[in-house]
Length: 275
Image (cartoon, rainbow, N blue to C red; front, side):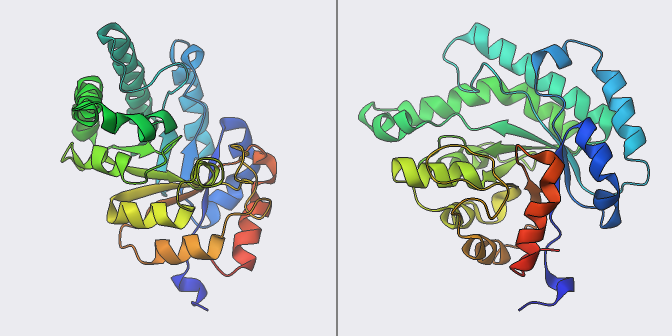
């Protein structure tokens, strides 16, 4: 078993409310932190700066790696409609404005790939290329803005059945501001319900392009966002794959039961995988 000093430090996805509950736990090891207050349109169109100030006060003394979950409700980043793409661009730029005000250096966005795409893109000549072109049309200004202040966009698997699709999409930007995220529960849903490979295969597929991981457990049927240990993900295999990387992705427990998040961390600690 690795020495404690060699184990990765696990962090969490929290709102401003649950951050207040877990503040000491986050600060004691300067754990990776993802703030989840800023993905809803009502927040972005409201007084989000007041929320930023509240969070900044809670994070007094924090020197760890800070990110946010970017907006995603109601859209995809590969829309065929240029008017919709303009709205998506606006929302993601709003997310980056929050990042800059908060001092966050990473923003999670959602992959455009679906199960339908897995079965149908290749029957339409040029369809894969057109998906990438539409994403570039949506994200062009967003990537430039992120590059300008040292922020990463990390593309999270949602329905992705082929773990390489969003890796190739991220690589197509040839930018340090576009990298890959893995959600273990989404991968396990795809594995159990659509025949995708298990979650550790997604780690290996991304390799050192992997900069962010949502750690959540599922039963392989639905997107449960259970605490690690409540589902059937093979955590030792996932962490063996993570151990083969040199990229040090941010490790973020992202669950519905944020008040009890340390129980999920304790499960991974008991397996000898994290501290």
